[in-house]
Length: 67
Image 1 (tube, one colour):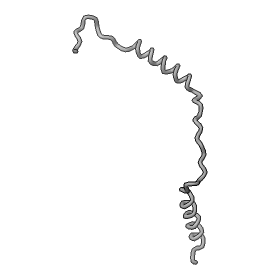
Image 2: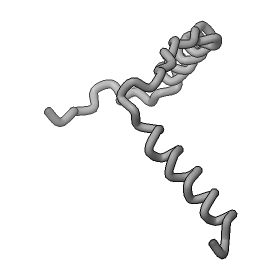
Image 3: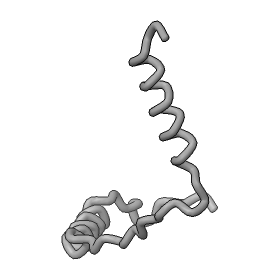
Image 4: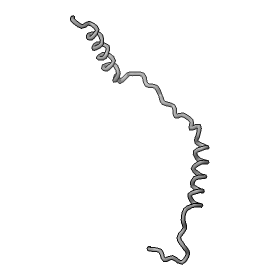
């Protein structure tokens, strides 16, 4: 063979490709991680919602509205 490193590299790549999709391959179960910032997110969302409700413009009294 003229390029033995190419041959070895091709065999290694082929073996990894063929063996990567085996039906009996070991599977690692993904455990859901606990959200560390969940309470902070809820508090921030609540504060922002209250602020948005306070600064939202209100229609003038007595102004006709489209229905």
